[in-house]
Structure formats: C-alpha cells, structure tokens
Image 1 (cartoon, helix red, strand yellow):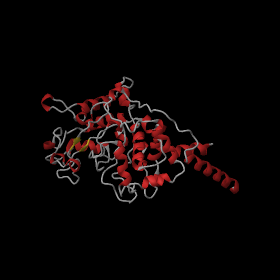
Image 2 (cartoon, rainbow, N blue to C red):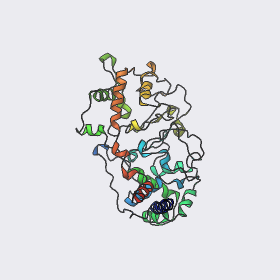
Image 3 (cartoon, rainbow, N blue to C red):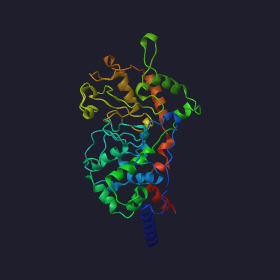
Image 4 (tube, rainbow, N blue to C red):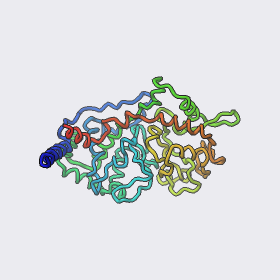
Length: 364
C-alpha cells in the first residue's frame, strides 16, 4: 500500500509540475474587452504602446502570482495583494523579502483602470510604472533592475509567452511592468449589494437605509441634520475621489505623505483617498494600518480627529469629529458592508493560475 501511495503521489507531482508550466491549456489571444458599468465613465488612459489583450492579461496574471520575481523566490505581488481580501493583505504593514515591515499599508487593488495617481502618496502616474516599484524595493521583492528579467529569461515557459504578447522573446523589466499592468486593469469590482440596490435589484434594510443617509449627509446642526459627510471624499459610483486629504490622524505627522512628492507644505500629511469598494474585507485601515476595524475608523471620525494646519476643511477638527451615536455608527457599518463584491473576490479569472492548474490536474 505504501508503494502504491508513493507511486500515486509521484504521478500527482509530475502532473502538477506539468500544469505549473502553463502548457496544458492554450493561451487566449485577441483584444481584451474591459467590462464595467456606464456610470464608471470612460475617463481613463490605456497607453498606446500597451493595448490590453487576452494574451497580455494572461501573462500579467501569471507574473502577478510569480514568486520568481523576488530575490528569495518566495514573494509575489499576490503576497501583499490577496484576492480573498480584495487584493490587500490583512496586515498593518506588509513583510517582504528582508523580513522588515514596509512603510505603509498595502492598498487594495480594485478599479485601478480609473486611478491616475497611484500609491498612498500618488508618486506613480501609470500602472506600468507602479508595477515595477515593489520589484526593485529592497524590503518588498528585492530584485535590482534587470534581475527579474534575467530570471524569467532562463525559464522554459516565459520567453514564449513574452513573444506571444510583445512579438519578441526578449524579456525586459519594462515588458514585465506592461504585462502586470494589463492584468491589473481587469480588476474591476462593480457587483456588490450596493450596486444591486442602485439597479433596484436589492432592497436596503432599515439600518442600511439609515446608514446611506448618514453616508451622504453633511451635518447641519442648525437644521437638525445628522451625518458623517463620507460621500464628500468617497462618493460617486466608484466610491472614491481622485484627491489627497489629511484626515486628522495626527497633529504632527511622522509621514509627510503627498508632500514627499510635491514638496508643498500644504500637502503635509495628505494621502490618497482610497475606494470604499470591498472595504469590509480590507482591514486594517489608513495609510499605516493603525485602525483595525470599521468600528475604530468610525470612532476616529466621530471623536478623534486631530486638528492640524493641513487638516481637510471638510472635517470638524475643532470639535474632534462628527459626534456620531452608537446606533449611527452601527448603521454606517451596515451600509459599508454593502460594498463587498463577492463575485470579485471569487472570480476565477483573477485567481492564481498556477494553483488553479495544479488543482485541476491533481483532481483528475
């Protein structure tokens, strides 16, 4: 029985190794059609030298989950951007090849097609550029420029895939960035219960309805209007604005944020407004991951906003917050949970292709 089990195990491992090469299925080819609601709008730019194709997205997905792109061959893009967590990692700060903590919390990767200034401080203006930053960072993936390309060039599968996408089997860092960018542009989330409500396919509960009102309302005590003014920064169909704000975490900043990019004093402590899509899956929160739950986020905006020279004008710094009641906080949490898109976090088109192929083969 032991010999039979060992033989079966060897067959499984060999089959799995074959599946790992990605040669068991044909690579799809042709233009890739990005599907999104009309309400999201067409205000985005895809570089003319990097059109989105099915073969490009396939290669980008392979690379997104490829640990060979790190110095210890254990860390991939997906290590810090996990699909089940809406492509965040659940950590306060991430850990890369050096074992050290990163400076900032890993942002969720969702609807990046429309984002024009990437990272918390907006220092990258394209997905092609952004994709290469963690590869070369000593504490993230730790490969010096050119090394990632050299590693992939020595594999049996990647040169052919690059030739299919770029017309040449020569692998470069720029082409790696282009392929990953193509995949990241497909990470579109637009089918939450909130979206179904907008389409009149889901009826809000009473708590969710109250939360919606609080989310959209700016408080006006003289008119007896309660609200959290959330929509000012997180409104619109995509649930974010292309803005940078100081949201009152500190009176004196230890991370200058956007100022490090622009050099402007008025940008001190300002960070990019993230989308609230799938927000219930992407804890902990803020640029440094200091707030562990949605409840503590609401506590911050309710009672703990710190006044500073660059505090965003929409926030009541002089009174330390919006003074929400316990019931109002619970209603807002109920509403925020509507933004979870289960189809997005379980979409097999976004999952690890290596694992998928391995499981499919071993099940046979």
